[in-house]
Length: 172
Image (cartoon, rainbow, N blue to C red):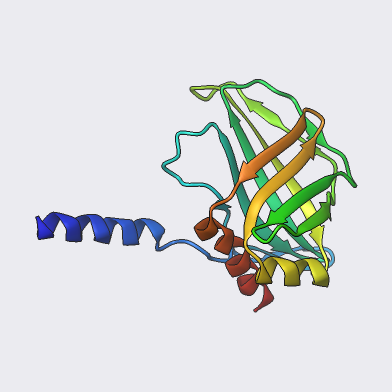
């Protein structure tokens, strides 16, 4: 029995070993600007049966951006976020922070997948105050305002640490 517990623990460790890495830097061949981005991490359990999922990464170039990757299963929704639209993050202590969408973007429907799903990547600008709040508080809920209405995502305490770790990586 101990042997099986050890094997499962080793597999879980290997499964999570690749977490929290920087992607290879991208250097613009014309301007020489360097863009860094963290590896995308799911903000909900990978084993979740939910079809309403969110992941995140941090990008640093001419600014610092928090990118949310939304994935809505079993739906064929075409939705968008306009520049200036808000993402609202509620912390465990009840405080709120509003982030402005940096770019206008829309979803794409993956008809070739089984089952069909809709996915989108939305980037939100971060300033120094936003970064401090994200580093010092636990995220409880993320609300993304879209053309289809508000999408709310509950975030566990453990998954709340992802954004903090990504910000620490990108600041190095």
